[in-house]
Length: 295
Ligand code: NAD
Image (cartoon, rainbow, N blue to C red):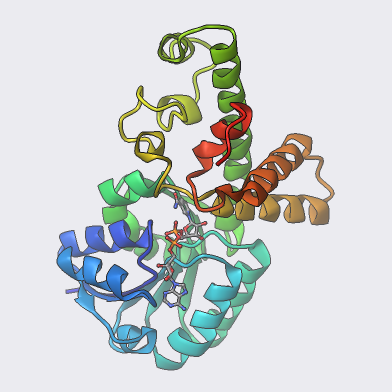
């Protein structure tokens, strides 16, 4: 039986680890938050007392952590000194391209295989096992990476070599941030014009305004029952996380000399919403900014 160490059991990692357990893999689960580990155990994983203990006998290590600094630290201090020879390491967090390449180099220098494999699809996709994975790895390692990822995925696409998965992810999330703002502005305007928001949803979702932010993650409560707008914007994908991704995109754009004016606007608006107190809410709560409501 494949033995997987799963480190980071938050909004995303919790559902992903549960899907690995459901696929009859032995999952050693660890998070700094005890309640997250308990939830994973209830879903069929085994509790590990530390990240080091989780990786000790693992064939595969999967990490799902907040940002680059967490990933660098966990690999340097916990994973690499304790992993068994031949282990495959897959980082699914969204982090900066430089950190992904630096961690990949360290992992390879220590004799292990590595993939950066950030995801799209939100908490609902993590729970349902329908995430899209964007993978940066050596071509020869991709079949093994894909086989491990499969129980968590709707799609697994190799973006290129190490770091390419993260590049794809920040470009995708720049589209997402800008499109969510556009959808929220449109709902706020529709409301001001006296148009029933539910009618607007029905019309736009059958017209050229159709997009994922509207039809899969509607910021207006009601039309899409699984969307965080129906639970007071709790859970889902935090504004602070979206802001992190938009900053990563702007940093990468500045370094690459790319013009991304809408991405810059989106970063500014999410920074404002964060400063107003919306950081912990799902990113679709930015609707409140355009409706003139406090977060
Ligand atoms: P989260 O904050 O809910 O979960 C992160 C978890 O990592 C927390 O439970 C935290 O306790 C744990 N953690 C931090 N440091 C640790 C350490 N040293 N050892 C063990 N555990 C540690 O965040 P999330 O929403 O699950 O997002 C995780 C990653 O996935 C982020 O990089 C995010 O950008 C990305 N992502 C999130 C979504 C989403 O919709 N939430 C979608 C796609 C990608």
